[in-house]
Length: 85
Length: 241
Ligand code: SF4
Image (cartoon, rainbow over all chains, first blue to last red; front, side, top):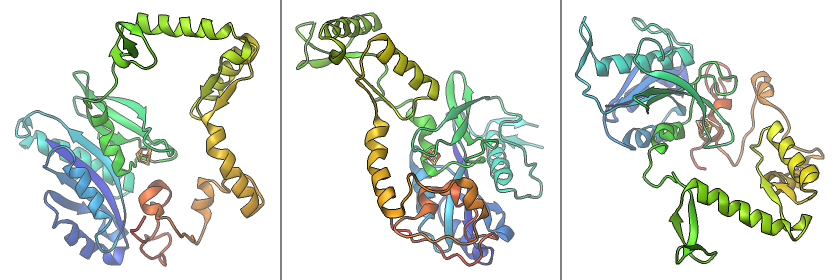
């Protein structure tokens, strides 16, 4: 299991468009922050360098000002295991 | 409520990002990811560039599983650049040097030999022998090349050891190579030494003029508010670098 979170900066007026362009990448989800131009993004799936490669490509997406990485988890355990019931 | 490990990790990741951005998300408690998981969180510094971000690493069974920008660090304030992605991975690279190597020919030290793994005992013994032999040539026979990453106390100890202990002036840091040329250029260009300004200057500035570099990609922690509410007139920095 390979999961990353990042903050992607964009001008608030561009944030909706930027969100949908980001979500075209596989495994990318935008969770909020559009109103302030700080998109809370997760990138998941893929092995090894794929997630970093995807985040590096964010920089070339129209309207993106910068991308910073916040959290990265990379574990070998089964991701479907139930942890809370 | 059923929650799989993936859901759990993901919501930690989202919470950490929301907390660092100061964004409130419905249904997500903005705690650090370090809460409520089964990882032991330790603090490290990223060495991939001169920014020196503080990073939290989550360890399980002696292995780094997760990393997160340290929210309390004054410089990076919870952020890392994409290179930070490779921090846990680099620990386990197959090409890592994990034991001392010595150039040898026919089982003996030889400057022109090939690297062979040796014990720490042998490594230290060889170093001591070479040092003692070099010392016989007097103070000029030995020298120390240090690093700009030395702490003040490490630099102090090195100075004492070399100058007071071995009576040698042959002590240099890489800093001389690095900054001496830059200082010359600064004096000539701006009439003053050293890069002018500090992080706080950026916080207080209203306008930024950049050329030849894309700070958003290279010194991201300084420009986290570029183009957002703080400087609404800024344009997107160029992506060429
Ligand atoms: S800016 Fe990136 S490479 Fe530099 S110290 Fe921070 S995380 Fe590491």
